[in-house]
Image 1 (cartoon, rainbow, N blue to C red):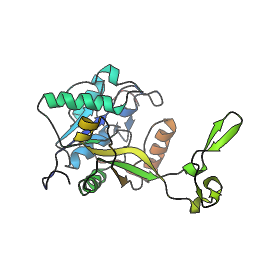
Image 2: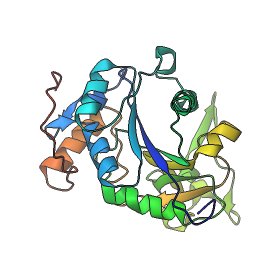
Image 3: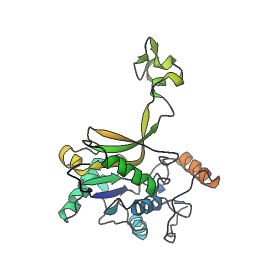
Image 4: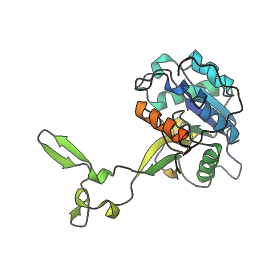
Length: 257
């Protein structure tokens, strides 16, 4: 833990712009009776890790939903920072600066994306414990084992292809090595990030250079990005293989389904 033994202050930021090409309105699309974003707000509040839970959105509709479930929306995100190509650093810098001008500052921030509805309060607490126990780090990021190993991937140039990773197991190239003999490789998922706020202020990055891994378990890191993911999520719920976080609020009346 940085800066003495005092527990650092932390804020949760939930990014939820309205535009989504693959699943229109996915952040507020209803699943399990509630808009999807509710399943991120609820666990963030329940975890008791954060001094504030703030939704960053460009939409008045999303803002109303977020407030219904207990999050703050102190202002809307500018449209210029809400396109599908807008990097996180832009709206985070803007949001932290705006809140700082209002006298609100925190030692750490967490990014909790609403497309991971199976993340729980326990997930967040476990990540926070991991983060605060690691000295000298810049951030923590959720990862899981790759389903598709990059050692088996190729780059195609015209009528030729080349291994993405030009490494091997001794004389044996990775692309011709059995999966069981390949080194374990992890891929980040979108469920959770935690970082010291100084990383943004001093380095203009959301991750820094020294990262600690947070290994998600089960479906904690499942990310809904397209129609197929949505179908899988609904099937997992229907078959009882995963449960959504419990919410105490009455469902917000969202028109889209």
